[in-house]
Image (cartoon, rainbow, N blue to C red; front, side):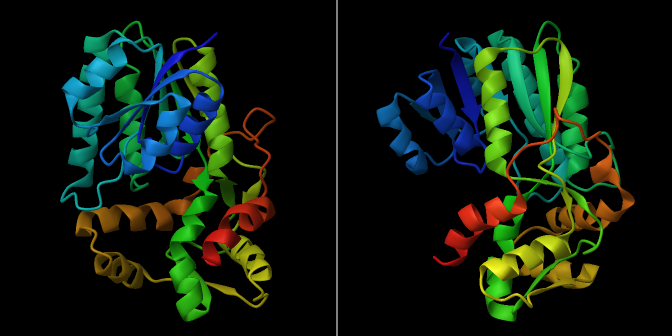
Length: 297
């Protein structure tokens, strides 16, 4: 069965992989992103490409109207003066478009830790979005609660190269589930294509096992030829100044820092690990296949 599917955030880390999987399977896929230049490569595979913002309710409604399923998410806005207000606005637009269009299957990109609505930074917004999407009537919604993306380590390549160590504000010795986005995309794409979920449900995607930031840094060090590479836990003020120096708003920085410093409370370890939540790509696989090529660019 060929399914009509809309993918929001199609240029993103997960959305781009979902798009490629579905197009290669021959599904009718509509890709929506603000900047579509990176999507042109998918046109030859049959993708319909729409330039649109996630806050454009008319564009979303029109795209959803003829679709069997859609992949939705809560994108970051690094310039938001009030992150939670922005997140609530996006969720409201998504709900309005879903209701007006009549679409019946939604796969929502959420996160581990979204069972909490405060004290977890960015995840408070994804948790609230889950609750609000669950109020939709006659719409099947599957929340993909993903573990911490291994790809987040790509963001500190500059620190590793310049400073000779890896660093974030998170505790280096507290193990949490970490997952490669390729595994998340495989699962999300399967549900979008097969429409195999009913009602409102959660699917945790937790990677092969739990890792500490220090352990994954060590794996990176071995791969790049620096087995002595260390992990440094930044102070809150150090982390905040680094974020502000990169041009993000103060509120967005505070949300990122709260998410990182709250890791030690265990909010990322809430979901049960079993065969259904465990995925195959190891940290070693990720580092060799994704991190190392990016590091060597």
